[in-house]
Image (cartoon, rainbow, N blue to C red; front, side):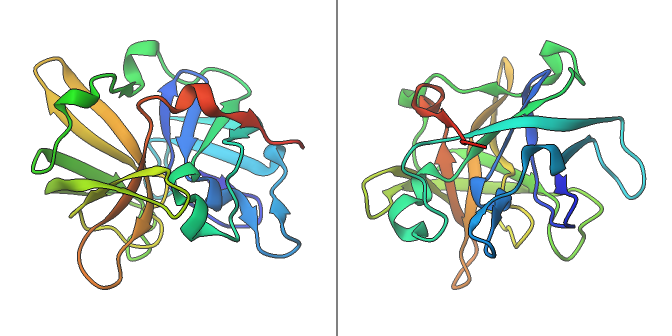
Length: 200
């Protein structure tokens, strides 16, 4: 996902016309507002100067209560759903959101992959990491903790796990730790019911 101002983050399909990413990727520090939706582009399977599909965003949705200027209070709400101007995949090509929170526990194997700052044109993934626990931001919103490697640019990447039925998406990467390997992701198990459209 990239904007016409040149900023980039990772994003991923959850339906043929819906992309999930981190909400802070859409925030402009100056002049303290979100970008215009029409300035956001999604390039599917981007690699260098190649991609399999392109779409423009027509609107995006962020949870009420998310404040980019108060990340410690609202990091658990730091995600955005982008609505594309046309479908760019089949339904079976999008990630499935996990609906089995009872199966999610510390120690389970997970994968994090995104477009990180050291290799911004190629997707890289940590295939050997684990969920380390459930934490909360200062307002009580839940966050998954993990020990996956991820730097700037991995924001918006999916935190994934695999079972017999395939790959499932647990959450959206929003915070990387500078003190040690790992980071935090916003759980998306029940978040679909708690979103509101950005008033642009």
